[in-house]
Amino acid sequence: MSMSRKEFIHKTGKGIIAAGAASAASPLLAGCQKSSRSSSGGFRMEIKSKRLDLRHAWTIARNTSTYKEYAFVKLEKDGIYGLGEAAHNVRYGESLESIIAALEKARPILENCDPWKFVDVNAAVQAVCEGQTAAKAAIDIALMDWISKSLGIPLYQFWGLDPKKAPQTTFSIGIDTMEMVKQKVEEAAPYPLLKIKMGKDNDEEILAAVRSVTKKTLRVDANEGWKEKELALRKVEWLAANGVDIVEQPMPSHMLEETAWVKERASIPILADESVKTSADIPRLAEAFDGINIKVDKAGGLQESLRMIWMARSLGLKIMLGCMVSSSLSITAAAHLSPLTDYPDLDGNLLLAKDPFTGVTVRDGWLILPDGAGLGVSGEF
Image (tube, rainbow, N blue to C red):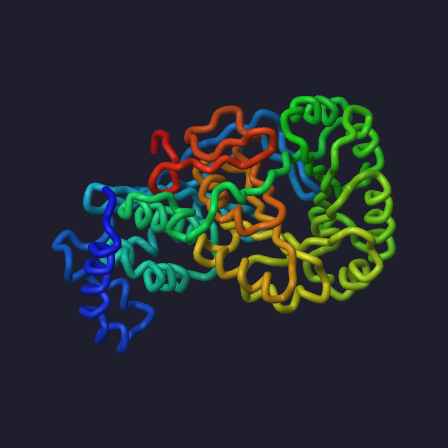
């Protein structure tokens, strides 16, 4: 249901005044008290898990998977619901069980919150347990979906963004046999930019396989695969000479001094991935990288991702907007931020055999954001 600006100001303004005293006493929990504007309390929360089968086995420098099983969240209030996906990653100490446990810890906050104080609600959820950022991301995605649905506008419009400024996304090619690498590249014909996973002992073989079937501009993600700075620099310059324009996380996340050495000598940009999770990580990375890869799933949500974008810009860093292998729910949520970024890498849904949701689409590599209210995502929860 849409709402005029006057009605919105009237509705939210009353709540802000009523909550003023509580906010002064406890800023973190001010948004988690029962709303004075509604007798229905906070959200009704549902948690489900879904198995997402992949079109092909997905291999990176660390591991291989043929499916993902994630938790999904539904927050419902006043006949409106918001959806969120927790695309967890074992790299950050997360599992389906730990994610569901974190979501349950947040349940009391959400069942007693005022959604319109979404900044305070998000802060309370962030504080509920250590780590488990995918769980927090799922909640924040659902929260922002609900807010913008309640206003009857797309989330990008709520943030004042122009969907036509969404850049082209890359399509990722995982490590595989050389025949399968060629097949994956050929299947990616509609996508003008490819991201190639490397970081093992067969980088040269992989690149040769890719180049045997395409001359497209490539980007490479080493996933911390190169452990010595001299090796990393040789790899980067070799890739640059073969049509690669960006290299992501060439060295292990803790090797910032060595990565800075590579960056100083490299002829193409070096971007951080595993080295960065939240805005707190960004200042120390400015000397070691030319940019960062922001992933809503590991940042802990859309609000934190937006904060990361502005902080990175203030330090002169380029921004890649990445993702986990996930459904269109998580990918579309991130895509609403894409007009603010340089290098979207939002293809996780395109790697699935069957996607339970529909949302953002891709045309000739360009991200086409849905114009429905909220995230604009449809599908069976």
